Image 1: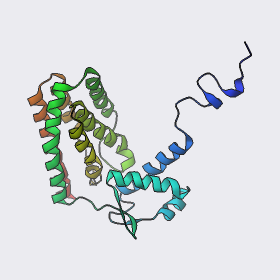
Image 2: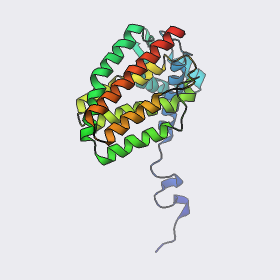
Image 3: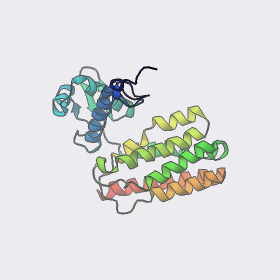
Length: 239
């Protein structure tokens, strides 16, 4: 057997790089996406403001390509919109009516998805939903700048999406995911929240799903969404 060539990297690590690690280009693309996303969420890029590719490229010290890729992803998220001749602009904040309509849609979709998840979820899906709630306990809720609660916001969306996926109704799950409700709602959060009950409400939803109580699961999700809307409207009143 020929001697092992260490210059080629260890087994499973071609060229000395761990197998499965993302390529540098993807890491850069993700970093630029998160940076611009934070600027939109924190209103450093004001709602309705033009988002200039060249200006962002200079500010971030990158070529225009990852900026264009990031803006395409943010357009899919509903955080920017592309218009002919004027390029990208940050989307406007939800109005009170827009917020109420968003939650009207959620209340139509998510309690039903949660009831179906209580009936149809596999053991693996139940474990995954429980893990998300456990992870949320380690992260602060929506206070301060987006960077401070980014992980909480991502886990919040994962929680709702995972339940919708566990309904085993692909069209329903897709509709829930496409609302991107967490981004629009957290983008409105501009007050300090001393005690956020979101996690406790999530735990009540999970307990009902784990017990396969479809009616109770739907009720718990409806209660969570109703209280979430009330909190947002209260923030709006107090801001």
